[in-house]
Length: 311
Image 1 (cartoon, one colour):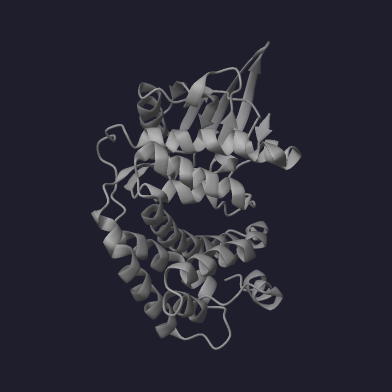
Image 2 (cartoon, one colour):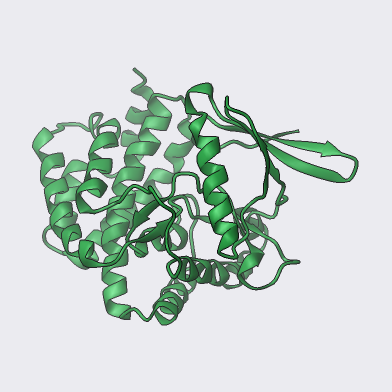
């Protein structure tokens, strides 16, 4: 049974035998190493006491069979029962706080300020180069301003970041106990990053609106569980969020223009609003102004240009 894929080239199918099931992950041949990374990070997560799928088999050409966590994705539950936001998000925050207490797997890439800005630079042009009266200097200026804001965050100890930690990649496993009720998916690209990196991905989702009250309770819970200064965490959360949003605008534009997946453009207004709101909160006169000059608001005209600009 084919399952919904993701923004990557991977495909998923559910295999059934009687009342048993498993998930077949199919990676493109050129990305077969993804399956090996998935198996390695899954094993690490399970060794730390978290719920990651058990891998039952993997081939050298990118096929992987693993445990089936079912269909209770957080995003699916929240679409039907939005009043369960706290009941789902707060345990997920607990998982992030707990992950930071474990020594990270070997060999993870480090996401410092330079690398974070480099990630934006790699994809931003997919969004910015269709803007009217585009000025190349505007993007450079915005990245310089962002780099200046992010550099102080390099002093904070890095933790394991699963990167795509959001409601579409979390499964509610209600029969399990404690933090193991949160089933983890899509963690093969794990890196070392600031503790706020995955926290922003979770609490300021690019694809759905997280209630403000839930976001604030999640931030307070994370600060309490990690012994972090709440005000400092809020500032770091916003700065990391600006970087994530700027990069996501580029990625969603690339998905539409290069990969012909225009559905992702519908999320650009939310992401742009998150980016500018957080930039204004940390630097009312500088960062937000620079970003607006480089990344025009995704109004109807801008979104139309993105849809039409297929190379």
